[in-house]
Image (cartoon, rainbow, N blue to C red; front, side):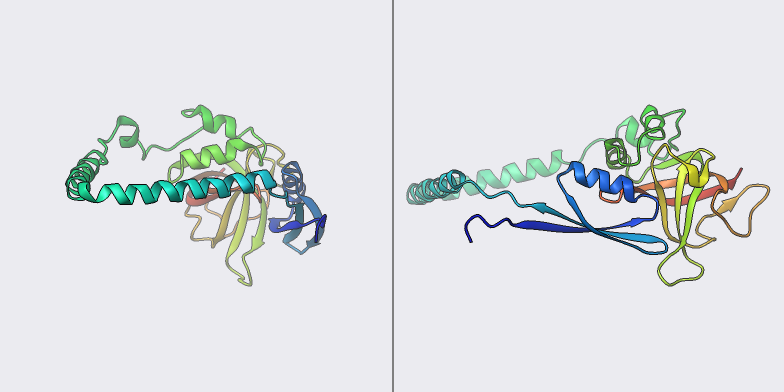
Length: 241
């Protein structure tokens, strides 16, 4: 129907405590919060955004371009048969050369990829630990250093059972010592881990972990979920502080 407003919809699941940050980010991107369902540990946020109509001038231009392209292809087929064998041999040579050059020589940076990243030896990580949990610095760092290992002093912001399991958990971590009151830095998350997965070390190894506990976290960078503002890590070792 002409003039009808059309919407696109998106549902985002968040860890309780990060709702406000996610809503703010989505609203900046033009999304409108439709409803919010809060569970004991997680919230479900439903958004909608008006679809932008495709300009008729753009549709017409695309159609014209397709007509011109079809004509060019037809001319190429008509005149290109005589040179087919020569182009095939040339193409084979080019692919072989490209395959050879596609194998890069390891650089000094790649050779040092096993080094642990800390705020002391990596300015980007130092900046990240002071950034907002939805800041673009999260996605930039996760993309650049995916698979690398980071280490930082932090605390447990929240502990939740994973799904219906009694001994597997989702842990929300933050830099610093403030636990549930952490206001600065990424919302780091260990998802679906048990106590053994944490690889607890140190002179005093706890039998369990609780909200507010302080540790030296060493973990591998997995990914950053920009919709949930969650920075996922995979634990390598966890030392009580």
